[in-house]
Image (cartoon, rainbow over the protein chains, first blue to last red):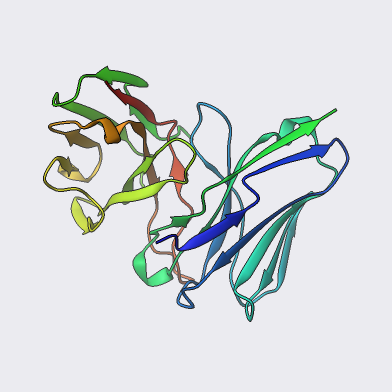
Length: 113
Length: 118
């Protein structure tokens, strides 16, 4: 059973455009929602994370929007660049489980010039 | 700081053979994780250590997989005997562990070992 559902599976965006990736979860015990970026041949790297006490968090061109009532969260990449081309994973964690992350299936983002 | 080190980077074995992966976490990180990432999917936790004790191994196929973290630093993950469906990237990650403000500190991943079972 997939604990975190992610969409779309792949995304193609023009340089300068906005990339939007969505995730949904069912377990209301989740209280930490990170996004990871993974380049080919590399391990995932933490990009940005949010806790459910806030509805939005922004770091540079990356923003997480969080809707607790809908149990959904999304990643927005503003002014997308070719260097952003990678696979993005959303994840969820219960603080009590000390870091057991449940990952979505990933979104392969391609930003073309 | 040096990142999480893993070796080997690639391994090709035949089914029913055995294989071992090695991980050296970031210095000072008490918590170590092994994740399995099958092609086209997100990573799935296999086992989690806190220092040299197992915190969670509920998703580890214990009939063929084993892991240890002697002395609370390096860790090895072993598969014996391997099956075709074990073909995946095996990722090691580490973190400081529970933070004082609640929750867990961020996970840092290594670049993984790509295992192909033929």
